[in-house]
Every structure is written in C-alpha cells, then in structure tokens.
Amino acid sequence: MTKFQHGLDFGDPHDGLTQDDIVEARTKNQISPPVTWIKGFLSPKQQQLLINEVNHYPLERVSIQVYGKQHLTPRTQAWFGDPGCDYHYSKLHITALAWPKVLSRLRVKLLNDHQIDTNSVLVNRYADGHDCMGWHSDDEPEIVSGSAIASVTLGACRDFVVRHKQTKTKVNFALASGDLLIMHSGMQQHWQHALPKRLKVVEPRINFTFRQIIPNYYR
Image 1 (cartoon, rainbow, N blue to C red):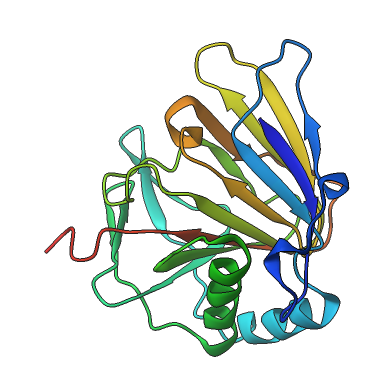
Image 2 (image 1 turned 90 degrees about the vertical axis):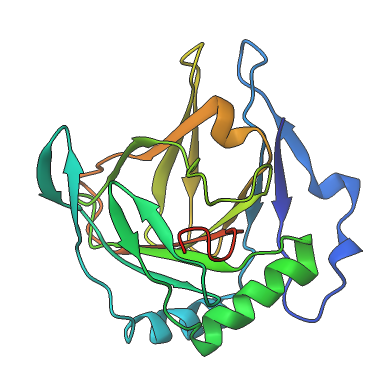
C-alpha cells in the first residue's frame, strides 16, 4: 500500500496529520509497493542548510565490479554512520564517516516525526540527468531485517521507479526537493528500484538514504 502525506517542520507534533492528509495510491492491478511518500518533508530553509553542508562532503565516484569488469559509478557518493556501521556492496568495503552536524539533525527528525531509527546514511549526488542508478534492492545482509529505509531528496525532481520482482509491475514517483520516501518492511524483498537517466534534467539531485545497520557486522 502506497501512502502520500504532507510533511511537517521541526518542532511540530508528528501526530498533527489528519486522515485527509493521507491518500492511498494503487496501480491498476492493485499491486502496490509498501512505501509512504511524504511531500515537502523538509522546509526550504532546512533544504538550504543541507545543501550548504553537502558542498563540503567528500563525495567521490567509486569503482564497482559489474559482470567481472570495473566501472566508475554514474554518481558521486559518501557514507556516514555510527562507529562500526560499515557497508559492503559490489565487493567494496565502505567505512562510515562521522555524522556531519545538519545531517545528524535530519536523522533525529526522522526518528521524532516518523519513529524511523537509523544509524547510517548513503549520500548520492547526481550531477544531472545523465547520472543514474540501475535496478537493485537494498538487501545487503548487514541491514537490519525488516527495518525501514528512508530516502530524502534535494534538488532536481527525478523519477524514482520501483518494479515488483515477480510481476514486473512498475510504479513511478516523481520525487521533488524536500520529499521523503519511506520504504517499509517487505519492500527490499519483493521490489527493486532505480533512478533512470533523464537527459532533459540539467540540475543536480542529492539523495540521502538512511538505514539501520548491524554494528560491527564485518569485524
């Protein structure tokens, strides 16, 4: 079941939403991904604070192995988290960097507003519509089973597409700056997601994907 909500600023009670603020969306064949889409989760001021901080992140393109060959990722990234919350994907071991100030505040906001407890975040920067992310699921073994994954968007509006693993049903979310997409339990097991190329997009997009990692999983 997909839900759409309107966001709240810092300091507002998280239970201020009414039933009128929530609209269920279903595909034609009634198969819907277990996500909640919260539009305008971050205010323009909060977005700008994050953008200013991101400009100082050590973002880089990393080399990953795809079908036995090394390729640079079509985006830049950085990984932040609590001590011991390292991450593995595509045979890479990524050590968590210490939380930046504003990003840490966003982590607290997710917990206070939506009870999403996280200890790490992957930051991806897509320079324009040529940068992209292929089909995948965030189902690495170090991610706490059944935990929600929260995705916050800044910058350019981009299509975030999800696809059911068996039926191949696709659902598109046009995520705008300040939006939050919560992927609930079952999403990674039964659905994949991607950020396809959109060549007409000329502005950058920054994405923050918050996760709950098993500390010291690789130690």
